[in-house]
Image (cartoon, rainbow, N blue to C red; front, top):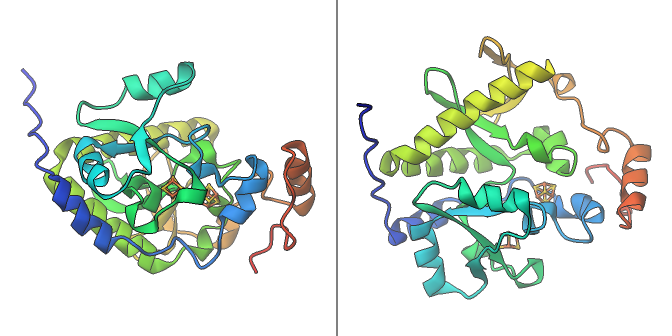
Amino acid sequence: MAPKTPRATLKPDDFTTLYEGFDAPVSRYDCGRKCAPLNKGSALCCSSQHAVVVVHKVEFELLKGRTDIWSKFKPYDRSTKQIVEELTHDCMALECKGTAFCERHNRTIACRGFPFYPYLTRQKEFVGVGTYWVFEDRCWMMSNLEIVEPTFVEQFIATYEKIFEKDPTEFQTYVEFSASARRVFSRWKREIPLLSREGKLMIVEPSTGAIRPGKPKDFPKVTPFNSERAYKAACKEAGGEMPKEGLRVE
Ligand code: SF4
Ligand code: SF4
């Protein structure tokens, strides 16, 4: 019989401490301005039509007592039903009232960490942060990793280390998620972009899992973030207004 995974010992109050230690913005730029025109005017990661926020049930326990911006997410199609069905027993999906009601101090760990996940090697070493590649054509930040603040990465790593200490299932989830990243990128014949624990650009060779330092040219920007023309066309197609500064980082 396979050994049982020990149960999580996370308590609602643990998230108070985790929130205090994880408040750094991803970068100095308001990246929502770059993705909102492609997404009916809202940041992609703040719209339950695009990205479902998954939390620990005990995290919701804490949030319920602090704010009324969060409620249980109601799946609205096959794919969102599947996301909810596949959640582990101690997790749940939430939705917030939207960006106009955002309370910075009551953002979930998932809000604070987007678009990154903890990347673990085949040897289960937590070496850095990878990106949720499924959003790469709609999340501008993922095509601009060189501007991610090292403080954000440090806080992200420290937060997940504390979560993993108290929740072995969460650790295992990311061991498996990182393995699936290696499989997907291997199939695509692409390298995996990563930020090291110190916030440095790194590249994972997916078939071997080998990691080396990366250069900006190793991180090609994804369509429509690879040219002003493609971006303008995508904004137009989505009915959004291109920001004045275009794709540039001001
Ligand atoms: S992290 Fe990505 S999806 Fe979220 S606001 Fe920034 S560019 Fe948009
Ligand atoms: S709480 Fe704020 S950051 Fe989180 S999904 Fe809602 S609007 Fe976005």
